[in-house]
Image (cartoon, rainbow, N blue to C red; front, side, top):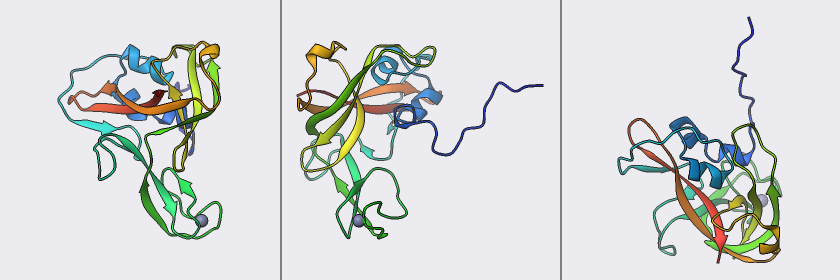
Length: 182
Ligand SMILES: [Zn+2]
């Protein structure tokens, strides 16, 4: 008998879908799912507890940020920036890293309007690559800005935003990030 569930391969799926893995388990609201380009599941009741959907999204402010921001792992040898844990630097091969908070503003280096997706994923949505001011390049959707390609330009200024993308049975809210025009 065939099983309907396929084993999850290491490294799969890609960033866009990993981004809200927690939220997808918990249940996405339709609006949040649309912002992420993901399928909506259901809505839940928030308890006040919030967790980011990726480790490199920090919801609280720090010395230089008033609120949510991204934190990269910076190679202590060459300064190359990475998200998520690395065993070694892809640029120089050294193994030392230190957390580095990144700017919440940047510019669009690449974008595409996605009109084709897995069943249940609302389209179109805008997937982009954002180069943050001061360093760091991150893939994320541009949200709350429609999907008309004429409204987007390479080099346009954007800023980080966060939004709830799901609530689990205990009321814990998963928080995802995207960018909006600055
Ligand atoms: Zn390095």
